[in-house]
Length: 340
Image (cartoon, rainbow, N blue to C red; front, side, top):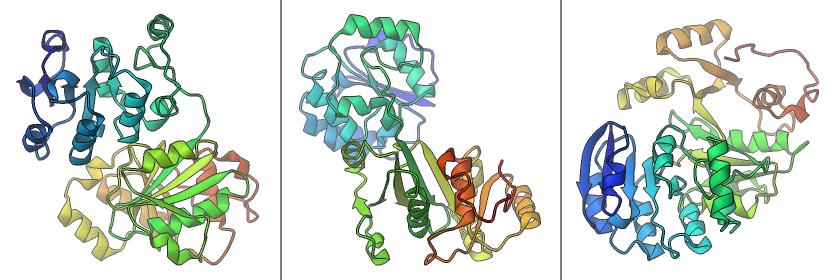
């Protein structure tokens, strides 16, 4: 179910055919919005920007972005020059606010087809187009364009996130090992989000950033072929094109995971589940899939992080679309044959 926060565009937004669990109308301070919705469960929030007190000041939006999950927010902009300025839109992207539009018809589309960072990167680079008529005609011809002023950037940067599902499932080491494989054929960067465990790997090319600055980091390195993000346990996956969800399939860790969230495998349905530091064979993996009602994308055994070449990781990366690595696997052949 969704929520609506409306003001100036209340009548227009009332015509959108979506399920709404809660709707409020008026002008609200950021404190009031945070108090009402920070712990309120909803699918998406349709937020009329004119319902935010002081929205013209970008620091107001910053306060909102720090305290709410903006990946759930569809922000309907007004037609003011200030809000539609390159500086304002660039700041929204830097805050992780990707789903904004001036088009009422685009609001419902964004609910089911949310933007990723790649969809709005051109705003942050200040490539905002003022030729609204040209943009509007492109929208009418191509439904994949989600805002009347925006055309997708065709840069072939791929952002890969590595995220722990079970605690300490090895995202930091795996991100590092994936970087070592990828850099043989690609221009690749790796960064850890909100932590700095990379320092223990003694590799000066590894970076770290915060969840607040991750979009700035991506934008500053947009010339790369691949950016690997170590998301650890908590960081958002919103900016990623590909996310590997790591599970260390030990009995204690799995039981702890289930006790913390009995619906975890339901939430992971359709996502790339990777068993990491695994001692499971193919038959064990099938049992795991049956009991968890899930599909395993890949099964990674314990790896020696001192080695420069890991055929297991090459096979994984090729399956993710990094085909320049095809042929780097000296052992040849499939190692696990459990791609789903």
